[in-house]
Image 1 (cartoon, helix red, strand yellow):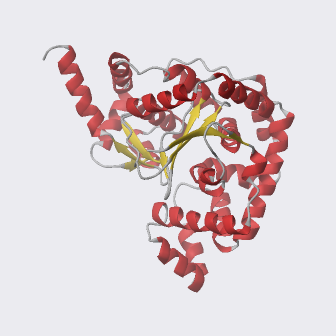
Image 2 (cartoon, rainbow, N blue to C red):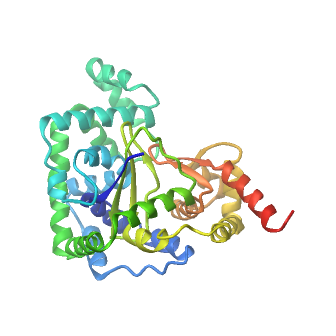
Length: 351
């Protein structure tokens, strides 16, 4: 499998936006993993600037990126820019030729059709030509996203050129905040220092240790792009699969500290038992054993609010107990992990 590891700067900006809207869940999640995350003054300044107030277009942009952020690699295609050991600046990510814009729209249609509208991409393309109002109605029926995100999805489908202009202009607006708060220069400096001082073999080895720890086996026929981010150094996205490539966004400290060596079996076992030992997470796992579910369904079942459910789901994911289809927010129990857990306990205690 081909692995390309570098820095696609716009994903670091996306992580900073995510943190701005989810600061407390991120802090709680990292705390449960033994990480006392102390956000930098630059990150706090960025969060405060984003939350202080913005015009309607920036609000739609940030809302969409929070609710549909997993599609950002389609809108800002890593595969067309990143090569091993290099950094791709935000400005390069939003320089889109007409041919590339057409590819972006086609991939967006494919992902949206299969993952959110439960239909074939060719069927959606035909509807866009023959009955665009039907497409709008179908988008309105998507659960779990706001009216702002639905508006932008419709723009991407029906008015792609204007939508991409909207996307790039608002990226530039956020970029000014990113620069003014000093967060951009801090992240770039950290990543440049990392690449200049880290052996590429160490990076690839850490990626392999990550995949091994989470029992992930990407399709070898597609390249795996691993891009670093430093805004929240120990917060990764999990493996995402797209039509022609895989993507993994990892914090710098995960490469340099967490997965620099193969994780001992005992450490993984301890994390598993801690994750299962909480009553709420245990009930979530029991429910998932009956069927895959959305976060909303789990919230309804447990009576917990959305933020608390997200916190527990993140911990279960970090313990490799669940898979999350990030495109449609469906969560599935990783039964194989539980089988391995049972086997490991038997081996350790000679049962």
